[in-house]
Picture (cartoon, rainbow, N blue to C red):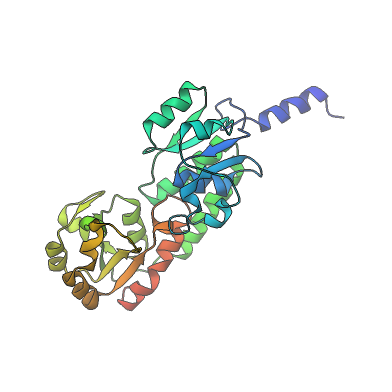
Length: 278
């Protein structure tokens, strides 16, 4: 027969967080699109009290349907505090005043930095699992991600040259998450030829002269800003006609979650059409 004292110790250890001596949180509020999705993938039933409103928009969130089952917040400190959270999940670019106020109110706030590589995806999943006390679930998700990534691995062969081109002429470089997606799909990034690393602006004239074989363009929406006018330029349209295009679907590209596998998979057909596989 097991000693009651030993049972109590085991139960206590099971409730601890990722080795930091803190109990697994019971009321978690996420106020960032990317932490929303990581938490939705890993949280225990009833553990997640609220997610940001942005996560319920299917244009930007891969988990909009599940997010809509939870109360949405507008990332305001006063609103978040009313949920009585014992943990708030935020991103690097979350409003500092909001984070400062929550901390002054005695709320634990954890900030998760953006992912810039596929290795970062594994790191963010593991980090979220630790914060939620869901380490085993996080390890299983990382294993599933690695399995999916291996299935999408491109065979040796030609690597077509591609460019990611967004509003204001912004192009993601090789040291960005979008760049990592492009590389994993079997493409060389023409941004490298301009000296860009994480990313920066490429003039449309320069892009045309680079002659990429594929242009990856964002989805445009009604009421778009003037910054997106460049995406309608006749020179870009002619480049599209000559080179071919693929969509950059925000919900699968912008957050470091296992959903980037869909972005990588979505580039498989264009690569095959360009003769990028043996």
